[in-house]
Image (tube, rainbow, N blue to C red; front, side):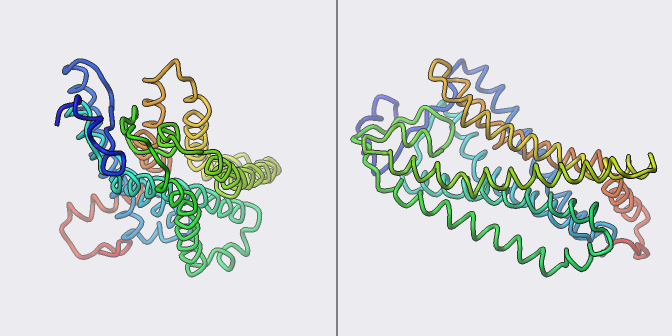
Length: 323
């Protein structure tokens, strides 16, 4: 269907995602870059999940939460990137109204769940540093699994409370979304209905989803840094900092990208920037998370070496692997 036919498509049937406009060469270059990133993200996060599942030295609450973060990164990538590649390759593309709502719902659910998950990871480090003697009794396997289930249920519930009214908005025949995927802000801008109630609801829900978890993370790390600075041994202090640094980097990237998208991207004079910034947390962050945890973590490196050596030896004598 040609772009000239866009206005003939009712807003209750389909939207047209504009994507990135430009020469065919630039679109092929962007498509290739995103495809490589997509493959790297899936492979990197699957590697993390595989290592945590098979290596006994990674059977701890910290690595369990890391594997859950990898699962959420894979779900986020699968929700956004395949359709994004299609749109870039075809210089824009249609997405049905139902598919648009589903994409928006799963995208926001994953992002919300990640906020809660990163908070739990901060608390895990807080207990490990400040209360190591009770760590195993506090961070039990049952409690960790229960927390992850609760996080997903909370994320799904909170997002549903404003996706439901979003799906009932009127668009008055306007169905061209100048964006790269179905996000809630471009949809609100496109609607001809009164969107103030939904915006107010999003504002209030940002407190339990984003702001309160962020405050908990900051307080946890302030306490952690204070405790680490009181450690007399330089070696123990460096080891403690090294244990927390990877997670702190991931948290910083996550919240910086959210801030960039929902604060910096409000500049209507830079439409292309408003499309590029969302790629930070939908494409860039899921790619760098496994890199950070793999290259900055000795246990991860050791687990990868064990898997590699076990594979080369072609023997069943791999005591530290559940293979």
